[in-house]
Image 1: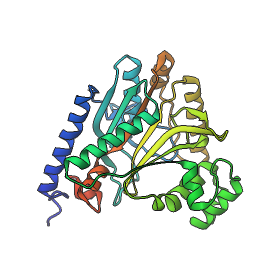
Image 2: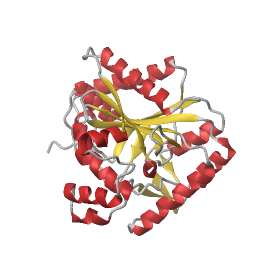
Image 3: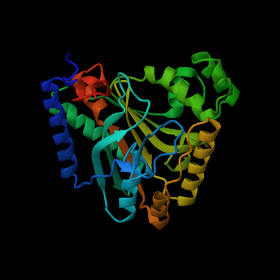
Image 4: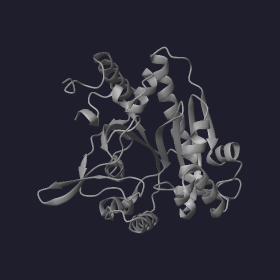
Length: 320
């Protein structure tokens, strides 16, 4: 029996430690405060596409946190200033070559910044890590969500009829997609059709559809379409980070949470109670800011050329 052994090599364990040092130094030099957020909380996300891992604490229901976002926003509302957290996060049902139910997440927030300024900083961080390893210069691209769909599928995701999106999703997936909602159809098409066509290097996709706003603000773009002020970053075709120009309106956030709850109920998924402490922080006043969450294990995969997330982790779920 050898399944007691770690997944990654001792050399990879050293590379992992070096990366954590480099990340912390990057933020120290930019005077961004490191904070540690709880990984166990009484509330969790309502997002229909994310499943939390439940726990029991002294007879009460609890959850392992899918990200430190809600706790960090409470710190921001309390006046913390620019902050980052480098720690474990958890998601149920996520295991495979690019997923592990327990993973290392880097999340940070910049006061007074918008999503484009934060994309610049994400690019600076990844470019710095490439240079530190003597890797070839990193090519950085920016594309709107609309440009991605137009180039690959020849449609405008903001104006395409739902029936057309359902037809495309059915062709790409299965007949069950014929009755799916707009957001889910777009997610499927992006994952199966658009994402594989992204160029190598670091690609920022921004201006997502309004129906995928999550915790981001929205705006009307130059084409007159209402879009989400969020971005995703892909490194050599692998999804790496998700960022927002953060929503600060507590009433709108409550409305979105309630929509999430209704969707979960329709899908026969567990109903998650609203995080009233987060809503209270928004009511108190979340400063204008942009935030991003970045998967550190996936980043290390790309930096080291690993084919599986298990190769860069001391112990994947299969050996826990």
